[in-house]
Image (tube, rainbow, N blue to C red; front, side, top):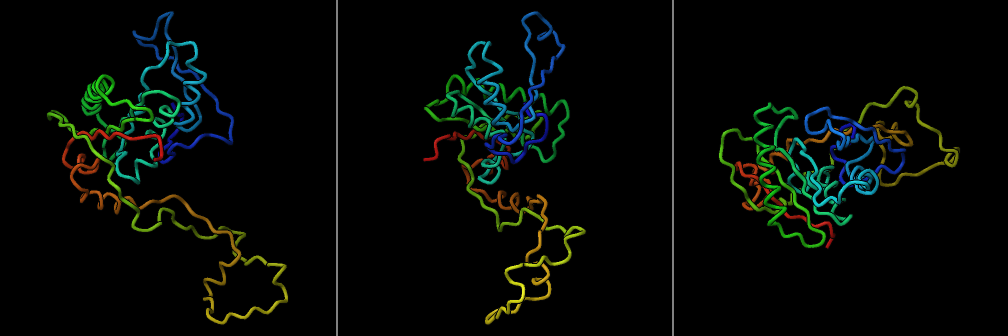
Length: 258
Protein backbone atom coordinates (compact mmCIF):
# COMPACT_ATOMS: atom_id res chain seq x y z
CA UNK A 1 0.00 0.00 0.00
CA UNK A 2 1.15 3.62 -0.53
CA UNK A 3 2.94 5.30 2.36
CA UNK A 4 1.09 8.59 1.90
CA UNK A 5 -2.10 10.14 0.58
CA UNK A 6 -2.66 9.37 -3.10
CA UNK A 7 -6.09 10.85 -3.79
CA UNK A 8 -6.54 12.07 -7.38
CA UNK A 9 -3.60 9.94 -8.56
CA UNK A 10 -5.74 7.98 -11.02
CA UNK A 11 -3.75 5.29 -12.82
CA UNK A 12 -0.51 7.26 -12.80
CA UNK A 13 2.81 5.49 -12.18
CA UNK A 14 5.82 6.58 -10.15
CA UNK A 15 8.23 7.06 -13.05
CA UNK A 16 10.65 9.71 -11.79
CA UNK A 17 11.69 8.32 -8.43
CA UNK A 18 13.14 5.23 -6.81
CA UNK A 19 10.41 3.22 -5.12
CA UNK A 20 11.20 1.69 -1.73
CA UNK A 21 9.14 -1.24 -0.39
CA UNK A 22 9.28 -1.21 3.42
CA UNK A 23 8.03 -4.39 5.17
CA UNK A 24 5.49 -3.99 7.95
CA UNK A 25 5.00 -6.95 10.28
CA UNK A 26 1.61 -7.02 11.97
CA UNK A 27 1.92 -8.98 15.20
CA UNK A 28 -1.48 -10.63 15.35
CA UNK A 29 -2.64 -14.19 15.95
CA UNK A 30 -3.18 -14.63 12.22
CA UNK A 31 0.22 -13.33 11.14
CA UNK A 32 2.60 -14.25 13.97
CA UNK A 33 3.62 -17.66 12.65
CA UNK A 34 6.49 -19.18 10.63
CA UNK A 35 4.31 -18.91 7.51
CA UNK A 36 3.41 -15.26 8.05
CA UNK A 37 4.15 -12.65 5.42
CA UNK A 38 4.57 -8.90 5.88
CA UNK A 39 2.60 -6.03 4.43
CA UNK A 40 4.67 -3.64 2.33
CA UNK A 41 4.52 0.15 2.35
CA UNK A 42 5.63 1.76 -0.93
CA UNK A 43 6.41 5.40 -1.64
CA UNK A 44 4.52 5.19 -4.91
CA UNK A 45 1.14 5.59 -6.55
CA UNK A 46 -1.56 2.92 -6.10
CA UNK A 47 -1.10 1.68 -9.67
CA UNK A 48 2.64 1.26 -9.11
CA UNK A 49 1.92 -0.61 -5.87
CA UNK A 50 -0.12 -3.08 -7.92
CA UNK A 51 2.63 -3.53 -10.52
CA UNK A 52 5.36 -4.07 -7.94
CA UNK A 53 3.26 -6.35 -5.74
CA UNK A 54 2.05 -8.63 -8.53
CA UNK A 55 5.30 -8.59 -10.47
CA UNK A 56 7.85 -8.72 -7.65
CA UNK A 57 6.74 -8.89 -4.03
CA UNK A 58 4.31 -11.80 -4.41
CA UNK A 59 6.29 -13.93 -6.84
CA UNK A 60 6.93 -16.62 -4.22
CA UNK A 61 3.32 -16.69 -3.01
CA UNK A 62 0.33 -18.63 -4.39
CA UNK A 63 -1.16 -17.00 -7.48
CA UNK A 64 -3.47 -14.11 -6.70
CA UNK A 65 -7.03 -14.82 -7.86
CA UNK A 66 -8.61 -11.47 -6.88
CA UNK A 67 -7.15 -8.01 -6.26
CA UNK A 68 -9.11 -5.87 -3.79
CA UNK A 69 -8.21 -2.17 -3.87
CA UNK A 70 -9.27 -0.05 -0.92
CA UNK A 71 -11.25 0.66 1.02
CA UNK A 72 -11.03 4.30 0.08
CA UNK A 73 -12.85 6.58 2.52
CA UNK A 74 -14.80 8.86 0.21
CA UNK A 75 -16.95 8.68 -2.90
CA UNK A 76 -15.36 7.26 -6.04
CA UNK A 77 -18.49 7.91 -8.07
CA UNK A 78 -19.33 10.08 -11.11
CA UNK A 79 -17.00 10.71 -14.03
CA UNK A 80 -14.97 13.35 -12.20
CA UNK A 81 -14.15 11.27 -9.14
CA UNK A 82 -14.02 7.79 -10.70
CA UNK A 83 -11.60 8.81 -13.45
CA UNK A 84 -9.27 10.48 -10.93
CA UNK A 85 -9.47 7.80 -8.24
CA UNK A 86 -6.24 6.13 -7.20
CA UNK A 87 -8.30 3.21 -5.87
CA UNK A 88 -10.06 2.69 -9.19
CA UNK A 89 -6.78 3.28 -11.02
CA UNK A 90 -5.12 0.51 -9.01
CA UNK A 91 -7.96 -1.91 -9.81
CA UNK A 92 -7.70 -0.99 -13.47
CA UNK A 93 -3.94 -1.65 -13.40
CA UNK A 94 -4.57 -5.09 -11.91
CA UNK A 95 -7.12 -5.77 -14.66
CA UNK A 96 -4.60 -4.78 -17.31
CA UNK A 97 -2.18 -7.25 -15.71
CA UNK A 98 -4.71 -10.03 -16.26
CA UNK A 99 -6.25 -10.24 -12.78
CA UNK A 100 -9.78 -9.85 -11.49
CA UNK A 101 -10.09 -6.66 -9.47
CA UNK A 102 -12.59 -4.78 -7.32
CA UNK A 103 -12.29 -1.19 -6.08
CA UNK A 104 -13.98 -0.56 -2.72
CA UNK A 105 -15.01 2.87 -1.40
CA UNK A 106 -16.82 3.93 1.77
CA UNK A 107 -19.00 6.95 1.03
CA UNK A 108 -18.32 9.34 3.88
CA UNK A 109 -18.12 13.12 3.91
CA UNK A 110 -15.11 12.99 6.24
CA UNK A 111 -12.09 10.69 6.36
CA UNK A 112 -12.80 9.49 9.90
CA UNK A 113 -15.21 6.66 10.65
CA UNK A 114 -16.00 5.25 14.08
CA UNK A 115 -15.45 1.58 14.83
CA UNK A 116 -19.09 0.57 14.41
CA UNK A 117 -19.40 2.28 11.03
CA UNK A 118 -16.13 0.83 9.77
CA UNK A 119 -17.07 -2.67 10.93
CA UNK A 120 -20.52 -2.62 9.29
CA UNK A 121 -19.23 -1.24 6.00
CA UNK A 122 -16.37 -3.75 5.97
CA UNK A 123 -18.70 -6.68 6.64
CA UNK A 124 -20.98 -5.54 3.83
CA UNK A 125 -18.00 -5.09 1.52
CA UNK A 126 -16.93 -8.69 2.17
CA UNK A 127 -20.40 -9.94 1.25
CA UNK A 128 -20.46 -7.92 -1.98
CA UNK A 129 -16.94 -9.01 -2.96
CA UNK A 130 -17.84 -12.66 -2.36
CA UNK A 131 -20.90 -12.35 -4.63
CA UNK A 132 -18.90 -10.59 -7.34
CA UNK A 133 -16.14 -13.18 -7.19
CA UNK A 134 -18.53 -16.10 -7.66
CA UNK A 135 -21.28 -14.51 -9.77
CA UNK A 136 -19.71 -11.52 -11.52
CA UNK A 137 -19.31 -11.30 -15.29
CA UNK A 138 -15.54 -11.44 -15.52
CA UNK A 139 -15.06 -10.87 -19.22
CA UNK A 140 -11.57 -9.72 -20.30
CA UNK A 141 -10.88 -6.15 -19.18
CA UNK A 142 -13.70 -6.10 -16.62
CA UNK A 143 -13.40 -4.62 -13.14
CA UNK A 144 -15.94 -3.53 -10.56
CA UNK A 145 -16.24 -0.36 -8.50
CA UNK A 146 -18.22 -0.73 -5.28
CA UNK A 147 -19.24 2.31 -3.23
CA UNK A 148 -20.92 1.69 0.12
CA UNK A 149 -22.94 4.41 1.90
CA UNK A 150 -22.33 5.06 5.58
CA UNK A 151 -25.33 3.43 7.27
CA UNK A 152 -25.44 1.72 10.65
CA UNK A 153 -28.10 -0.80 11.63
CA UNK A 154 -29.92 -0.52 8.31
CA UNK A 155 -30.56 -3.24 5.74
CA UNK A 156 -28.45 -2.43 2.70
CA UNK A 157 -29.98 -2.46 -0.75
CA UNK A 158 -27.69 -3.00 -3.75
CA UNK A 159 -28.03 -1.21 -7.08
CA UNK A 160 -26.24 -2.08 -10.31
CA UNK A 161 -25.34 1.30 -11.71
CA UNK A 162 -23.64 3.26 -14.44
CA UNK A 163 -21.22 6.13 -13.88
CA UNK A 164 -22.94 9.50 -13.66
CA UNK A 165 -21.42 11.55 -16.50
CA UNK A 166 -20.79 14.88 -14.81
CA UNK A 167 -18.31 17.63 -15.71
CA UNK A 168 -16.62 20.55 -14.00
CA UNK A 169 -18.75 23.67 -14.38
CA UNK A 170 -15.54 25.41 -15.37
CA UNK A 171 -11.82 24.57 -15.05
CA UNK A 172 -11.18 26.26 -11.71
CA UNK A 173 -9.57 23.51 -9.63
CA UNK A 174 -6.44 25.56 -8.98
CA UNK A 175 -6.17 28.77 -7.00
CA UNK A 176 -3.62 31.33 -8.12
CA UNK A 177 -1.25 32.54 -5.43
CA UNK A 178 0.37 35.92 -5.04
CA UNK A 179 3.73 36.25 -6.85
CA UNK A 180 6.68 35.22 -4.72
CA UNK A 181 9.33 37.68 -3.60
CA UNK A 182 11.90 38.11 -6.32
CA UNK A 183 9.41 37.64 -9.14
CA UNK A 184 7.67 40.99 -8.91
CA UNK A 185 9.72 42.78 -11.50
CA UNK A 186 8.85 41.99 -15.09
CA UNK A 187 11.53 39.95 -16.85
CA UNK A 188 13.14 41.53 -19.88
CA UNK A 189 12.73 39.81 -23.23
CA UNK A 190 15.99 40.37 -25.16
CA UNK A 191 14.22 39.82 -28.48
CA UNK A 192 11.87 42.70 -27.74
CA UNK A 193 14.37 45.17 -26.31
CA UNK A 194 14.30 48.37 -28.35
CA UNK A 195 11.42 47.12 -30.50
CA UNK A 196 8.21 49.10 -30.81
CA UNK A 197 5.13 46.86 -30.71
CA UNK A 198 1.86 48.17 -32.02
CA UNK A 199 -1.31 46.84 -30.43
CA UNK A 200 -4.17 47.63 -32.79
CA UNK A 201 -7.07 45.80 -31.15
CA UNK A 202 -6.15 45.40 -27.50
CA UNK A 203 -4.47 47.64 -25.01
CA UNK A 204 -3.37 45.57 -22.00
CA UNK A 205 -4.32 46.74 -18.54
CA UNK A 206 -1.71 47.48 -15.90
CA UNK A 207 -2.40 44.10 -14.25
CA UNK A 208 -2.02 42.23 -17.53
CA UNK A 209 1.18 44.09 -18.34
CA UNK A 210 2.67 43.29 -14.94
CA UNK A 211 2.05 39.54 -15.46
CA UNK A 212 3.49 39.29 -18.97
CA UNK A 213 6.54 37.04 -18.90
CA UNK A 214 6.16 36.39 -15.18
CA UNK A 215 6.20 33.04 -13.42
CA UNK A 216 2.79 32.41 -11.86
CA UNK A 217 1.99 30.11 -8.94
CA UNK A 218 -1.02 27.88 -8.29
CA UNK A 219 -2.19 25.36 -5.70
CA UNK A 220 -4.75 22.57 -5.90
CA UNK A 221 -8.04 23.89 -4.48
CA UNK A 222 -10.99 22.23 -6.28
CA UNK A 223 -14.47 23.58 -5.63
CA UNK A 224 -16.07 20.24 -4.87
CA UNK A 225 -19.26 21.72 -3.42
CA UNK A 226 -20.44 22.47 -6.96
CA UNK A 227 -19.69 18.91 -8.07
CA UNK A 228 -21.59 17.49 -5.10
CA UNK A 229 -24.50 19.84 -5.78
CA UNK A 230 -24.76 18.63 -9.38
CA UNK A 231 -24.64 15.00 -8.22
CA UNK A 232 -27.74 15.55 -6.09
CA UNK A 233 -29.74 15.60 -9.32
CA UNK A 234 -28.17 12.52 -10.93
CA UNK A 235 -30.50 10.31 -13.02
CA UNK A 236 -31.94 7.09 -11.63
CA UNK A 237 -29.64 4.15 -12.24
CA UNK A 238 -26.38 6.07 -11.83
CA UNK A 239 -23.82 5.63 -9.07
CA UNK A 240 -24.49 9.10 -7.65
CA UNK A 241 -28.23 8.37 -7.48
CA UNK A 242 -27.57 5.11 -5.63
CA UNK A 243 -25.50 6.77 -2.92
CA UNK A 244 -28.00 9.62 -2.54
CA UNK A 245 -30.75 7.06 -1.90
CA UNK A 246 -28.70 4.97 0.55
CA UNK A 247 -27.97 2.08 -1.81
CA UNK A 248 -24.67 0.31 -2.34
CA UNK A 249 -23.49 1.09 -5.86
CA UNK A 250 -21.89 -1.64 -7.97
CA UNK A 251 -20.57 -0.36 -11.28
CA UNK A 252 -19.10 -2.61 -13.92
CA UNK A 253 -16.17 -0.87 -15.60
CA UNK A 254 -13.87 -1.72 -18.46
CA UNK A 255 -10.12 -1.24 -18.67
CA UNK A 256 -10.41 -1.21 -22.46
CA UNK A 257 -11.01 2.34 -23.77
CA UNK A 258 -13.61 1.39 -26.38
